[in-house]
Image (cartoon, rainbow, N blue to C red):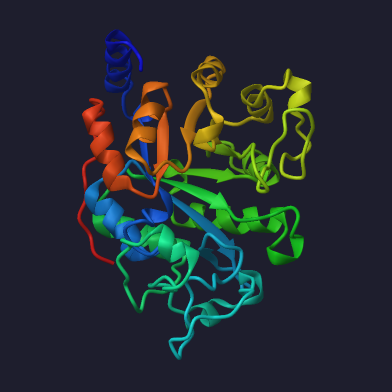
Length: 327
């Protein structure tokens, strides 16, 4: 536990930092512990309660539409066809489906017997909910009247499965075109585990902050401290003293977004010394949220934005105002 003085200083820092530097309370996939992930009902719920950022994922369809989806294809744990039956494994990649095809599916209720259902037993089903386009999400935010909420948009692209998405250049071009057309460039961050897409964003839209996602453990590991991986666009932490913050700074990043179990107070201090913000994912337990705030993270991505609001409020952090809206 930090000292009382440390806690007071942290609260004061958050209070005086202003909007650009405020603690970032992010609703992961709109808050998927509460409502179906990456759907307009979930985002409406997050806007209504009050969050700093809507975290979401996008893919591109066969006809070039940018849609909101965590998976690169239809998710059999979430997706029902026109007959009401859950689709079978594997789900068809979005890049092989037209938007009109995707409109036929319902993602408003988790498959009851799935591991996903056990993970989020309290999620409220909203049958009849479809996969939205990014433009539809922007329209919902306009409808809410919220002029401050930001968007943390993840490019769902995997360098190890190039056949399941557009190539990085095509993907980024489609995404940036929608953001520019909808005039949300000043409220967007783009994040990815695939740093190739972030390099392209920095080249083509340098005013948009880039968020470098990392995972250092398990079968899903995307970075290593002693070598470049397929995810890191040629950047090797070994060339930067084995430091992920220094590597991300060299790559041109604005935010480091690690799995919360991979960070320490020392690493956060190192990132801050490099003018990198640190926003951790995905933190769902009260004690973990409190610990992350205490060691100095700049934001938390959570499936439980309602609980995160409670914990942040208890720590003296100013909370974003809600803007009630219905899809």
